[in-house]
Image (cartoon, rainbow over all chains, first blue to last red):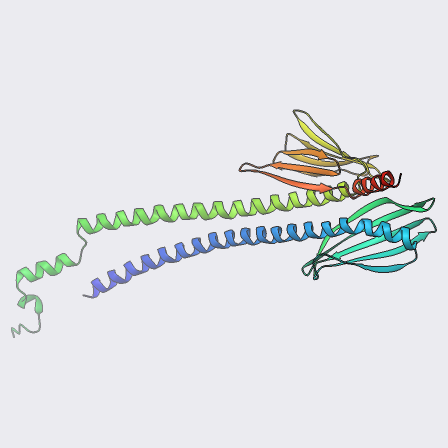
Length: 141
Length: 179
């Protein structure tokens, strides 16, 4: 009777070890896969946000040119209307000289923001784009 | 003197004694089943261990590769954004794209067969490179540069826009319309 009880305990011990090992292995696999999925999801979200922000930046460049041609390069900040109300787009004009100006465009969505710097030069009466620099650091709001 | 209640071995009938002794050991069938179960469980555990190790290693590898690709893509996007012209070239051993900005050095991106994507400037201001990448191909369509990553399962494409070229295009369209 006693020995039978001991055998039963041993059997349960082996089963318990097997269960623990299985549990640890499965947990490790699930953790690795979860991390991979989380990274993928984060990357997809960042890619989508980045694409949307770049669209806004590209759409704002003609507005910056028009603004300079209409009102000159006096320092000012102009909000630009966006298709989605939760997104914001701001032009900041900074004069560098009477014939050069820097326009910083900042696009913001509820989750991220991105900016670009445009340098304009004036030839005769028209302002035209000289250089465009994308600030690649996508900031999460 | 001869108290049967004190020594139960004496009072047990021989058939019961034999049965009791037999119960203390395992039968051959029991051992065989146990060995078989142990083998099955061991095989399953080894398989599971191998699968876990592979999954963990693959996840880490993929994560590192994605970081490397994202870093290269961010640099390329910045270069393409400021480019005044996009010129691609390809031969059997490499694929490249030249992105000259208005000011500053001309940037050339080149992918070589050994899996290395490099960014060089003329005049040289330093070279950046990303190793162990899947095959890369460049193609240009007006102000758009397309990067194709030829992965094992499927090709992945990433498109970059040149703000500079778009602005030039808009400017010339405006000038043309005004004329």
